[in-house]
Image 1 (cartoon, rainbow, N blue to C red):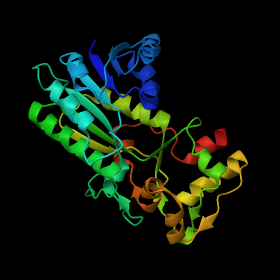
Image 2: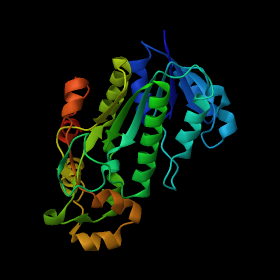
Image 3: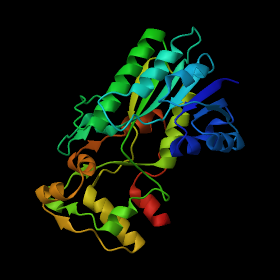
Length: 288
């Protein structure tokens, strides 16, 4: 049985774990002993290390045939030093992961004024958050080309699930943009993203492949929140002019609200079939 190293032991990795266990011997990098105990209980072998402490990463070398990387970059800067340190450590031995799956963000495309985008669209990151992801993608591409590893990049938009809905924004009355000026957003259910990770690892393809890891129904941001409010019985958020909303929300939140694009998921549906079981947000809202 081949060995898979998971770096980024968050929600998506935990959801993917039951799909991966039958096919892989799984190592999971964790920061704390408490997390190590949880992952051991779930059937993985924990490795205690810290992505911000390079000396602790020496133990990840020459361990795995494949790498699933779901860890986020730091909160500041335009590069991802965590990923770069991991790749530097992996490259120190001749035994390298031959498969890498990385969860990126659709924010790498920047604002497209609501236009449809395929994976061939140029990258125009605007926010530092998106620039860090572009840096990570470029570092991974260089690593894969230099060492002959297969690389899959899953560009995910807003991730949701019954346990991770943006309810606080409704409760706080955070304003939304008027419908006539609203941005278009894209979504992916957390379970579907976990299935895409497992399917990408199962492919064992060569070269570099990129996917828009999203569902089939882009929505105006306000429409998504209206649907959520109506389903949960909360008041709808107030709608204001675009310029006024920008003044009233944080720069970080505005970086999400300002960009507008429609992502095509045709490649995912064609090459990783059966993974998108929530093709629209309505499928979850009906369950709720």
